[in-house]
Length: 371
Ligand SMILES: Nc1ncnc2c1ncn2[C@@H]1O[C@H](COP(=O)(O)OP(=O)(O)OP(=O)(O)O)[C@@H](O)[C@H]1O
Ligand SMILES: [Mg+2]
Image (cartoon, rainbow, N blue to C red; front, side, top):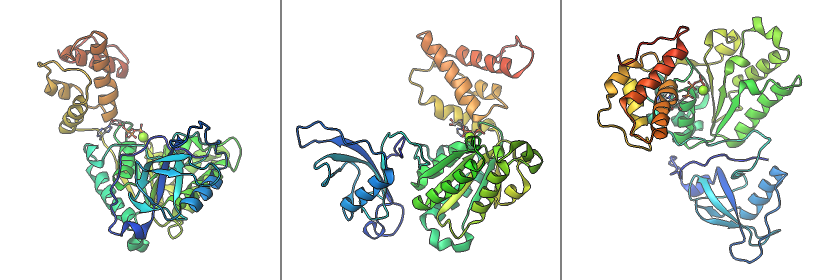
């Protein structure tokens, strides 16, 4: 069964093609019961997802779908309604290739998840990666036009918390395409052959949902240098499956693979060579730290003290990643202020900085960050 965890904001189609010509690529439904009848029967649990999709395509084929409208079951459960939560492209017609999703259903299958409301412009710095994303967006908008020159396999690498996952999600959001995430650590299955099967399945699914993005996180877990693979049993099989799929350019039209790792040096040379571009993510410089801090502080749910000195905070957070700034400094300071029923003050940030230095240095230092 498939589910969709979080639904994107409404979209406007980016393609120049007429909506009617193109048809709905995918649609997200939410069961809404029987709004026109008094019975309160629930729709039966959908256990055979493919059968439901077939049934849905058959009965709603040709209907123009818009977010907020309802689709009524006309056959087995007459008048049961599904609210259209999201449809891409908006206002196009349902066809025999439309992919259907039911909101918030448990899943045991690989599914596209549209999981971000972040835009590429929200990612601070990482300009080379953002330029590449602009190109990928052009490709996803017109996969045919690129032919063999398609951007296919891109590797994001660099320290933890520098925006690799954030940018991949933002790309999917900006391009309004599904993103199929896979954590490499999760596909090393219990049984030999399990992981390889999952890789093939992932690419098969991607073809169903193309144009789309495959995001392989923690690539080092499977793309590990062959010298270490012997320790890991079925990893060789997984690597081979991945290599086959990454080579399958013609078969995967409209599918772009982005992989991410913190350990680029330990990635197997054969896997590494499949990436047309390796893009390094770096920790934010002074200007970028200021931007990350400012943009996150603006969404604080409580007031910030008028004497707050952001420049000092920028100086004192040198060497921290974007994630450290958000999760360790800002969140910590905010939470302490909330507990004290106070505005967020300089001292709250100071305490948060102290905590992080004591985490990062073996010996606890008594020196205040602001002293
Ligand atoms: N360049 C950035 N611009 C804005 N915010 C950032 C940036 N980098 C990190 N952040 C903040 O840190 C959070 C975590 O970043 P993200 O998960 O993308 O890091 P990552 O590079 O994927 O780390 P890991 O290697 O551990 O997976 C983001 O959700 C965001 O709030
Ligand atoms: Mg990540």
